[in-house]
Image 1 (cartoon, rainbow, N blue to C red):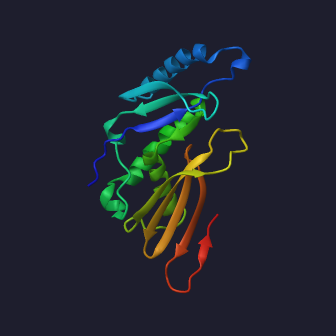
Image 2: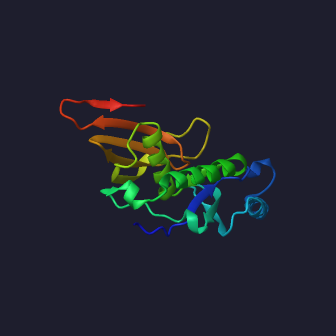
Image 3: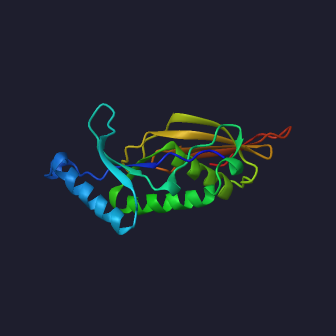
Length: 200
């Protein structure tokens, strides 16, 4: 079984525009203190909070949260590995991850998730929304930094990860953006004379 030793990494964008009256360096300690209190209230055990900057060509201050609880540690399975054999309880991990992300997003705006978390969201999508058999799915490829269009809401998300899976002679592909949203998917049968079947 694959060793689970990666904490969940979540990038938050809770800062207000300094033009509204408060500089970023003044906002940062207040945000960190608020986040610490909220995590403690939710009984989150071990975590680290770091000030970060995810701007590309310009400053974009962010807060990076590392959740260090042992039950959130895992790796993306090796390619050509059957998912069920490599990640025991992946459905429960996906559910737990979504709960944390949804809770954080209500107050702090989640803009970045690690590849391990995006993998769980992709797996949940192909099994629950695209009909993949979760006991027979094999991970074929992980392609990082897939470009996607900026969201109309103004979120600074402009890259994603493409996951390619195989299950019962059907190829499944899912693009998950760095905030955890499904940006694109498709399904293609590998049986003779079957054509490409886009699903969205």
